Image (cartoon, rainbow, N blue to C red; front, top):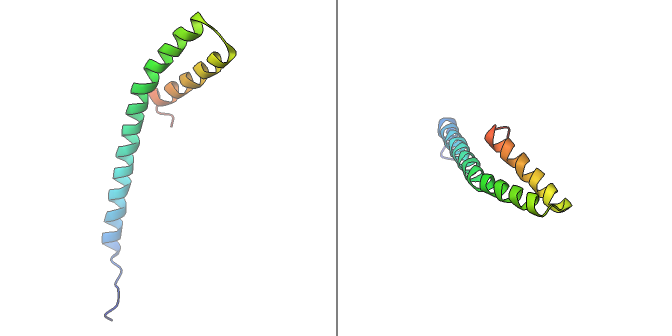
Length: 75
């Protein structure tokens, strides 16, 4: 029995570590999205008020949806 032996505890610990690392990066992505999309939404709102076009309104709705989803942690 000199072949490869599977260590389930080492595998489990490695999977838990990867899961924690993924959760951390997901949290960081949400924080970065909040920092980017909130000022972008304000800028787009001002632009839409001054020069309203259908494309600006659609972009504004999409940005507001992203902001709402990120603020309330619905993603």
